Length: 37
Image (cartoon, rainbow, N blue to C red; front, side, top):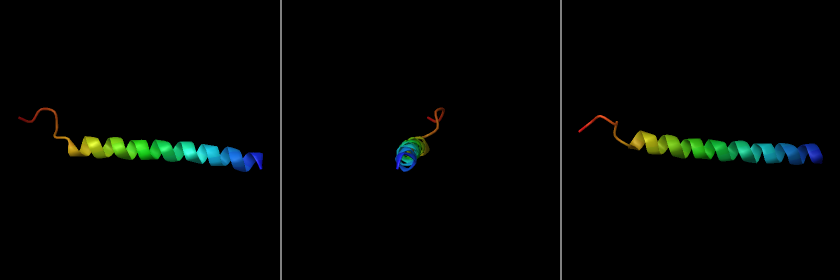
């Protein structure tokens, strides 16, 4: 049970990082490049 719990916590942390990365990428993709008028 302890191993399953540890894996669940690890997976939750990785999932959170993936969601944050997707959000950051989406925002960066929608912004215009920094040198355009």
